[in-house]
Image: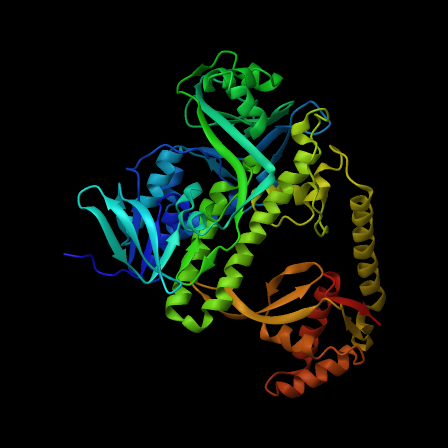
Length: 537
C-alpha cells in the first residue's frame, strides 16, 4: 500500500533536518524525515554557540541536553595573531541570558534532536537513502529513495527540505554549489584520551592554535576525551597524502604547534583519524518552487569559529517557517523565498568575513596558506572586545574588525573608519545634549539610504507581512512598528518635530498630543543615533 502524501519531506536527520522537521510538525504539517544512517551515528562538529541555546529551548530539548553531562563551554582560547601566547574570551562578557554553550558528543546530541522530532509527530525513517529529488514542471513533487525493507520507492509530497549535508542533493543535481577558493581546505581529526586541559577557568574552552601549515582545534568532550583536528590547505595536504598515510599525515601535523603538541604529550589516540573535505561553499539558489536547502546543504563555512551547528539549527527554523508559509500562503511564496535566502546568506557572509579577517592577520606571514586572504569590511559601532565576543557567540557581528586591531595588520582604511565612526557617535550625542528640550523645534533630515519596505518577517513558526527599516547602520533591515513607518514617511526635511507630532496626532485622534510628542522625540533620538536620521537642523 503506497504511503499517504505528506505535506513535507525532510532529507537528512542531522541538526538542520531534525530542527526543521520538529518545527514544521509543531506548526501542523505532516512530516516524513528520511535519514540514510541508523542513529546514533558519529559526526564531527562538537562545539556549540550560545546563539543556539534559545533554539534548543524552543525545540524543548534544552533540559535533556543539560542533563546529558556535556561540558559547558564558556568561551574559547586561541594562539593567533602577532602574539605567541594564548588569549581567551568568555561569552558572559556580552550575553548574560546565555553565558555558555556546550561541547557535545554529536552522536548523542544529534540523537536527542531526532528523537525529539519523533516525539513531536514526525515520521522518522532510518536507513532510507534518498537517490533522487523528482521535479515536475519545475516544481519539486517527491523523492525516490531506497528503503531497507521495501526496496526502491517513490514518495510524493507538497514540499521538500534538503538537509542532506555536504551531499547537497538538490544543489548538486542542479549544479548550484559555488566553491569558495579562499577557504579551500581539508581537515583531519581524531579523538584522544588524557589530553591536558587548559587551566581554570578556561578548562572547557575550545582551544585553537595557528601554525605554519594552518590551524588546529582541541575540543574537550565529556570525561577525559578530546576532539583534535587539523585544518590545512587542500592542495598542500593532498601532496603530502600522496607520500603519507592519513595517520602519518595527522601525526606530522599535530606535533608541530607547540601548545597542542604539549597538551597531547601523554594522551592516547582512541580512534583512527578521519579525513573530511573542508572546502567552503554556498549554493547559488537556496530555495525554489516546492523546495529549500538547509544547513550544510545550503552552505558550508570554514569551521574556525564553530558556526556549523548554529547555522544548521538557525536555518532549520527558517526553512520550516518558509515551508509553512509557502503551503499556507502561496501568494507570499516568492517574496518569502527571497527573505529566506537573504537571512541565510547574511549569517553565512558574516561568519565567512570573520574567518577571512583572522586568516589574513595570522602570525605566520611566510606560509602561502595565509597569503591570499582578504579582509571584508562591515559597519563598526561597538566596543572592540564586545563586538568580537558577540561575533563568535553568534550574536550581532557588527564591528568585529576591532577585535584584532592589537593582533594583526589592519588596513589604514579600516582604522580611519573606526575613528570616523567613534567621532560621529560623539558628535551625535553632543548634538542631542545641545538641543535638549528644544529638540521639538529641530528639523529632522533622513539619510539618503534610509527607507521603509514591506517584506515577509519571521513570526511564530511562519513568515508574515511586516515592515523593515533600512539605514546605513541597518543594511540588513530591522523590523519596525506602524508608528515608525508613518513617522518616517512624514519626515520631509522641512517640518520640525513639533509640526510632525501635530500631524501624527491628527491622524490618531484617540491619542493624546503629549504621548505622540514623547513617542516622536524618543524615536527620532534613536533614529539619529543610529544614522537613519542624518541631521537635526
